[in-house]
Length: 352
View (cartoon, rainbow, N blue to C red):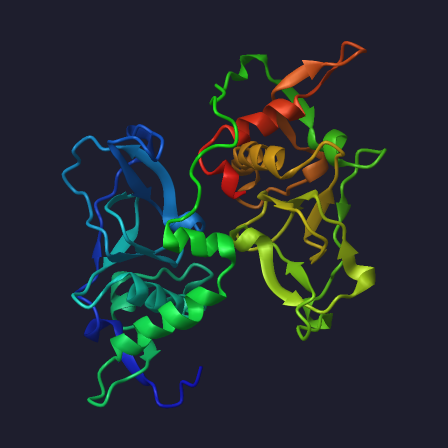
């Protein structure tokens, strides 16, 4: 994409004046399923899932934000396009404009995200800074943003390059039906505590580190294998690189983020072989698959708060509570099949 003849525009000249959305406290909201007739999106500063924290019951809130807007977490610089109506968590700045639509919005979000690095390390992305942020755009013969070119580029160039599952989202052809017809109910009273090192470690209960100590030694030409780093979004994928056999970590494993900017304590599932940063730990269990891994990630994420504010994360020593059954020795072990079945009973499980 040639940007030589593009022009710089201030956000002030593209959007209405940024404003803060009314903040709703999560503790005062009732979580519901996405297909509930009264469901509305609850958008926060989270760095995943397009800012969507939960679907909640719409209690006829007075300050529902209309869709077709860009949301920015001013303390996290998390930037997303919101197509549907939503309510906000704290510190959400909203951008609107008469020119905005979904294709243009996604293009602009990608450019605004390129400015995020300016607002890391405690420098908040406040309304006045947002207002004076500059982004470079293609222009028409009158020197104005060429919105039609942007739409054509997104529709005809970017979307066709997306993975098929992502295209299905765009085309609304994905299958929302669960793999199993009956939804299972969670009842944690009978669950048992397990040490992560006992589930995913070696004979000594130790979970091994991944092998790449410096991303600079990897060659991007070739796009043979994913390089996984210490981030939660994009399933940890930083880029694709040339294969380097001595750095490869085998797939079908849980990946525990032991260090990184804001992602310490998070977990990932990697189905394929990959090259991982030494800030990551890879754990294996013969019962693991992509379904029960999703269950485990959700449970592990509930434990992440314990490792905030600089407290060191030791994956092997972490404990989590799981559905359990007794084995032949009358000892408890995780009920791997129940966890798999639970995920398969959820909407969209066919899309995994």
